[in-house]
Length: 405
Image 1 (cartoon, rainbow, N blue to C red):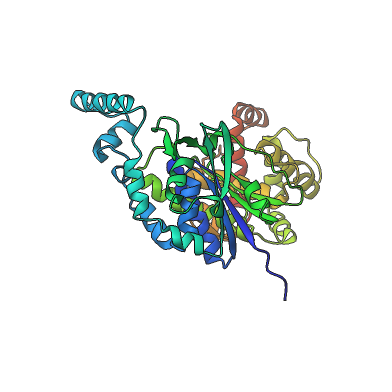
Image 2 (image 1 turned 135 degrees about the vertical axis):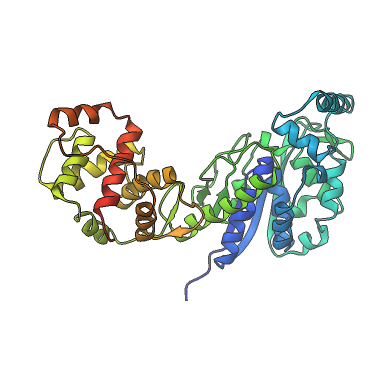
């Protein structure tokens, strides 16, 4: 029996985008991973504290049902109009009054956030948890960043330091015992090194791509795997319920992509043997291979060699894939374009046959009728296509020509 490797999670700051963290953690827990420690900055620290104290399910439900007025001193309706820039004269006057109050108070009051966290965070449970926990903030008084483990934080002050880590510019400066603190994202928004110093050699950095600075990993023997969102997570202060729930779901599936080694960038495809895929591609007729070559201006050659040695590498290049991408990455990347255009459900796990069947069940992009078109006219039609149109046309040819995988 192999030795279990304890993993650490570093959660990047990013405000409302932090819902993505919880989706990723849900995937890790369902897949049976042992999480030994969590570090985070800003919202990453808040989420990490909830998980470390053993309240993941409660934290997940909190995100599902979160309203802006629970954490900010602002009316929910007023907040939504502000976020979506949809307000009348009366609302504009209310917002002006709110902004004036914030300016007079030297920043947005975090009192409501503290009250919210006091109902959610249990300091004793975090301190007694076997899991490691750390956060990042910046002391303005001492003019230095602070990378703190739970044991470094004074008793009874954990919630204060969580707020200090999340004290985004524009919030009122957080004061703790005559010292002032601001958001740790201005030093390190995804604190991998905090885990490395605790001995973690396998770290997953859960990214939100939020604003902030990043410190390079100082430990060459630490393997860091980045879990990135497959779509834009939205604005950092957009707590719209539909967006939050979408980001929870995206985090879950993007986490599964890494954990299970699923293929795809937009969709989630189970991998298969390369030989099996190549056998399936050989179902393409000589005419279809020739049409693929013409789309990308490739000279003719023996169909099998042309497909593998010229067409697929050229498609991979047009898709912007890395040089190490294999044939499966290329085919999946191509079919994803078609699936997205057809609006196929993203949030499910497909095998390649499932994806092909779903694509064929939808409406494929029209191709010019072959009959009655001369070679010169066909060439002019091909030359007029944009790069995106060529990729969609290539995807259509493969979807029609490959009947099974």
